[in-house]
Image 1: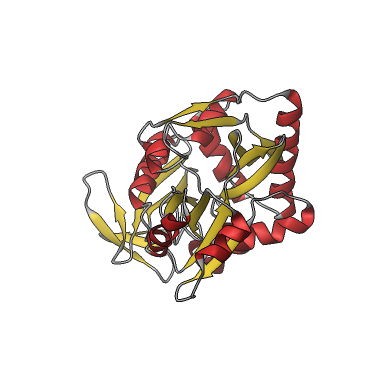
Image 2: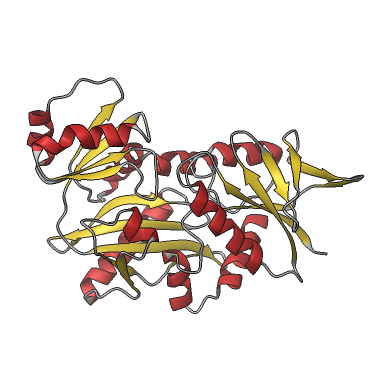
Length: 324
């Protein structure tokens, strides 16, 4: 019997358009002989099912069901394609776990940890994971640019702590750039993280649970045309994404071991994509995405293709793992 799959997309953050694209790719790709897919748009002002004619039907949040005419539909599994809040920060995971509905992403706790860059990096440091030097600010904190420069140096990156797709990220080359960069970051979040610049090769490493095992996918090297891997580089073609990455055997081994270790230490499930920069031959962790882009051009699907995992198989496996 075919399973009813709710594909949630949209969200409350600046990433909602990217999420809609990812969700629609999942919708188009799922095997109709196995699944009945439903597009579910999650926005602050509405949660709706959108049918083939783009007619909207409200979601009953009491049990996450839909009523179309006299028919009520419930779901066997939720495919999470929401980048950012509330799909990547633990809120939707907690909601579905309370309703006992399987979902394809990690659990509420893991999502909350990984979405908060400061907490994520702090938890992993005792395990020997190397990271950049960092300085933290909360909205309303007073700060001194000289203290920041003394801690992280220049240039440095100013980032919204809980945001993705490089929203709220700036590179400060001079002390005088910090104030504007901090303002930009606070437009996305009430917490920011300022990190030292790591000058080296940048790579993205996908790790998933595949057929019951932790699998590290072929690594992607990021070569941005812009000053760093910003929104334009990620989504507007202003970068080279080279899979497999041009790494030495030693570099590949080191970053593969680190990425797998992070996934297993955090008891992750579902998709993940971690970003690293090599400094003095050692991979330094930047962040982890637990609902990475799922368009055909996105990095994780590129990596799956390099591992001979077609997109339909990648999505099918995610549902099967969730239903376990």
